[in-house]
Image (cartoon, rainbow, N blue to C red; front, side, top):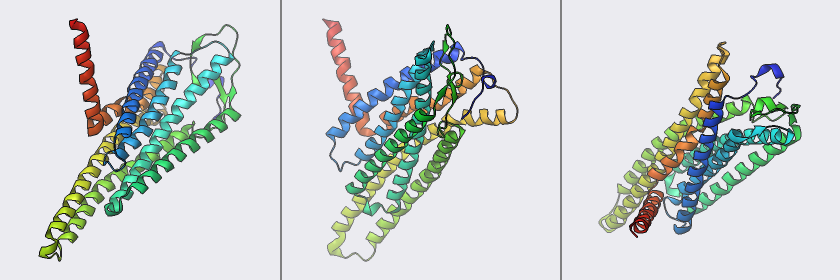
Length: 330
């Protein structure tokens, strides 16, 4: 990813810098709070609880989003004055993009997992859940660590003149790097992950309906009077499982919709640039910030759509309100 001095504007506008700082702050607060709440819920729930797996998967998304917001907050507040601050600017800008890419990879993996479950819901077990959690952990660590090694070993900063003072701007401080995922190819990989996730999400909804219907129908065939009670109980279990899986995939579907809306401005901006339309630095900076819209809205979706988290947040809010009411009445 090579750059030259003439290729980019001299800096970032104050508006874009302020919005970046606000985005980073809100993303960190929302996702850090949600991760803490999900940790308490996971600790309380039994390993076979129906909502435990989607909560664990949501932890991966919220962790990446929260860390991305943390580095985005750095980007919005760092003033480049010397080599050290230029180094911090480069790493913070790179990390926030890579963490967003990891979130896109995670949502694609989650959709693959849910589609696998939907193909044969009768073989759904706890062992499969734990294996997927391990796989997701390995993917995040492998991609994150390998990318940072490549980025660190190939990073070349531009010369920083004495007396300079400007807002953090990746293209202004980085001369070159051989990192692939931080380039336009990384955006392409993220887009392909989302496209794959979209397809699998739709297929999962279809397969869930089809699989449960086939399972329930087969349980009705050839039953005798002595097996009516057992058959009825099995159908109830399968229908309950269908409802649980549909709830989980609906949460994933809503998150996917926000992900797709987040990258839409980037795609439009890319098309305009390809068509020869020049975009100002302020506009382009705000377009890049659209990538983080999902990190702002995902906590809202997870909190409102997952029952156990919603109950925990509501109970905590009620206790806090009562304590505040008691304190103010003294």
